Image 1 (cartoon, rainbow, N blue to C red):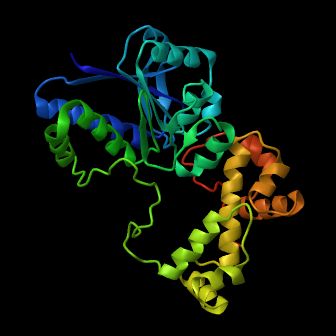
Image 2 (image 1 turned 90 degrees about the horizontal axis):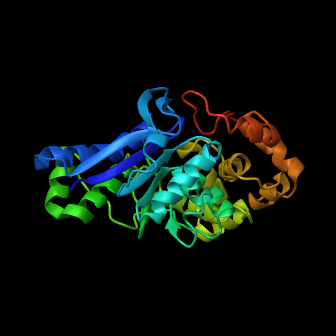
Length: 331
């Protein structure tokens, strides 16, 4: 019997992550010479669903499949996952869970599983820019910054290129190393990343080791102290460098001063909390290392081109080829 999958795509889902997840199963079938895997792509309404890059895919209606057993049901979502939390979708997901199906998520699909109450007491992950919001909204779920997490009947993936690794591990669990190696080779996926791989590991950058160690150390300290900010002289003392030298390196590497870079990553964290949670703006300001909401709002508008209050309304609405941050303003 083939392993059956159902992929539920939401409006503005990430097409690349979803196809990267599906394609290893297609290849495994091709290399095996028979259908080891079968899948259907559905949405709550059926019909054409537009992805975040403007392309669309034809889907079948969820209602036609919600009473059909599936081995694995995966929710693929990207922008504004909270708008997809319909009672019908939640009920269908809970029904599959009761029937013993494994439930999975790509990218922000994790929000939908969590909102349906299906990740309580479980380990899970999502894209790194949404990790803070997931932790704030669902404290009863152990949110990890791994590329993918397998926790019994709940499996989640951060999306992007990691979706192929996610699928290859499923193939490996079901059919062993030989088919998995052949599938990865066919896809030119040269290295299967293991469980526990971090989304942003302390390793060379994709283009190589282009960033000096002292800059990496300074950024790591900043990232570890987003709520209680450390002043730049203290960071320099910790890493054994003069502030003048650190200023020069940051200007060369990231084209910003250390203070501006630090402020910006705190604002990036704040933006995730503004657009993805119901926390008050005062709470978000404090959680992002700003002394008061007035200072926070001014800095926020300078970086993103709109106030946090306005972004809370507009930032939830996806638009074609949206980039993050949405309104990048160079100081």
